[in-house]
Image (cartoon, helix red, strand yellow):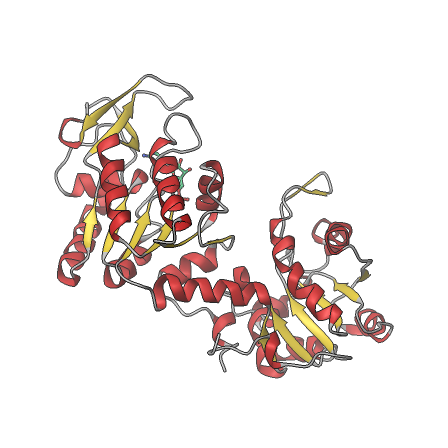
Length: 397
Ligand code: AMP
């Protein structure tokens, strides 16, 4: 982590530490339904507390519009955070101003305090210097442990890092370390597996990848657009026919950059999209006009696995088929398990991320076998697109 200041570089004893974390967890009927994001930041919070810091937690929750709204109050997640920390937590009903200042003034070393949703102020998303100054009044140092919000230049994700001495938290550190191993300084050969529904949402990502990786596997609905662009008929499959020129451009760039593109050679086809629907596997030059491609076929899986065997590093975003509905999960599951096995054998560094990818890899049962799985959605995608993340850049030494 030479490029960033981390918790190894600072003595936090007695200091007021403003820690930006991701508490934007899914909730139903007032209960947190998935606490993964909270669990990830617990090591940072506990380390700061055990070192005698006053741990002041900053986060956003949902997308409140134009001011405080009980529906988006962070008070709702305090019991879950306290339960996971196994430590009582105070809550201040504001993130700046007298309520926040009084709560911070009452803190002792090792205490935790959650401040109210930063997005209750428009200054948060505007990265407003006055709002940043108000936030900074309550801290001596700033720790950012919210990689998933690092693609936004907001007051609590970017602005504060310029006003207070700034450090990467342990979760951020782990994420940056994994991402460096994945794309920035990877052990080669480097392969990318990209799937998902559409090319249109991943054009920048594909363009960046063909520039950086040695081999690119394209699967999922987006492969249909590439197959169509290379003159294969894809029947009634999901495909963005108007993006054929874009797909051709990406293939051309791959040729110029010496990136091997691995497209499906066969596909699992059904007439309807429902669990257990009647399905057949066809070669890619024989897709029936009334059929829908819903997964890659067995020969394609074998090719993908063989390509993974050649690689030392793998980055993965997006499922290879419509994995939510069996049996169309098979391609994703088999390739993911193969990558998991190579990783366990010490032959592969595997990094994956982005919304549906986490669900797909969990479904394949390999989440704990990959080297690293990022729970960040937008930030992970922007990183795969080769973009600078403002929240990360602000932490550079
Ligand atoms: P994304 O959010 O772009 O990663 O897309 C994920 C979605 O793509 C999942 O809901 C999959 O069901 C869907 N998907 C993957 N392959 C196909 C396919 N061949 N046809 C239709 N949808 C697909």
